[in-house]
Image 1 (cartoon, rainbow, N blue to C red):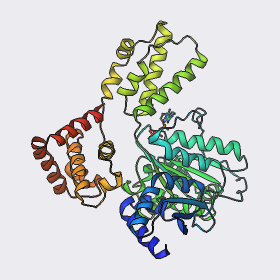
Image 2 (cartoon, protein in one colour; image 1 turned 180 degrees about the horizontal axis):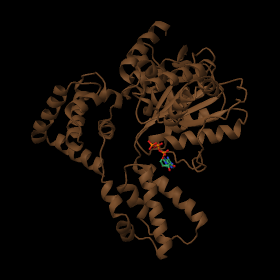
Image 3 (cartoon, helix red, strand yellow; image 1 turned 90 degrees about the vertical axis):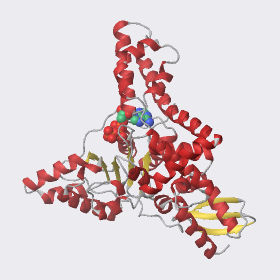
Length: 446
Ligand SMILES: Nc1ncnc2c1ncn2[C@@H]1O[C@H](COP(=O)(O)OP(=O)(O)OP(=O)(O)O)[C@@H](O)[C@H]1O
């Protein structure tokens, strides 16, 4: 296999895995050798190698074989040859700044130990852990995003706690984007911009939470951009969170978006049933460790994990209320008692299905890749499931046709309309399709 063939395979991958995945996982691979059907790639870190093996190895193997090199196995070797996307983390630490570091206090409960890992947050957790080791990292910034209450702040605090314990020599600063703006405005008002700049540039690890807050705030963005660049230039680690991907934050300057995209962008997916149950069980165990009189009937946690699927904060709130109630009335928490006590929460969190959940379920059901479902290819084995997913998105969410089109790789609303109509027609004629639809709908509404 020549570099030229690998070039062709890379090009194909670029089309199938999506721009983000491509630049994060495929670009850093350097083809080293092909011997006895084993293709070996150099990777900048073990983490990247493991991730590519788990998520893209089959695809790479298949494409290499199609391109004419029979490949039976893929291996990864960590090597300096592989291009790290950004320089590694701070080797030398900044001197302790003269002024008080600008960070916000950390919540002592938000640690890695108390963070429950499941499929939806697996990658975010692994990336956060890696950064928290305080060693050289190959991504800067780490950009974490996800919906409300899915654990972004928890993970950032966990990184800060761990870094402070492992590397007390580092100046680790965590603050929200709002606090960053507040400090900036205050410095402007008091004519202390030099101090402000100096203070932020003396940080070794900077974490900014909820960065979407600075969208539309021009001078804060400008200053954030300079701080960001100055720190990256000095090989300091930056960790950012937001409620959506960098490219989707409206009112954020293009140059900032592209800077934010230049490291590792990972999302916290909406929780699934298993993760919710795991979180509930962990919290009950923690509560029981301190209060041994809690009695809860079987099935209560399963019921809550099933019914409250909005976000973890609401789930925690429900449990706290149950604990308080149980300790007040001194009774066993039964299913009926839980239903009574949480009637308002249960009503409010009646399940809202997202387009992404639909896309994932449909890909699973038809055994096709998520990236193919939303990608540009038009083969029949992809086109029909895509139309089914569009149909379900129209039926089960309140999204408009243009919005649905956007979420299917930027397709036009007329394409969505055509897909929805096609499935409506087929549903009446083709029993397989109508069975599939029933099954998918039930799985999504479960
Ligand atoms: N995987 C998890 N394991 C344990 N607790 C979790 C997990 N995910 C979230 N939580 C808990 O849920 C609550 C909300 O999480 P957090 O504040 O980190 O959310 P967020 O994503 O930052 O939300 P927001 O967008 O509102 O800032 C916290 O109490 C946190 O400890």
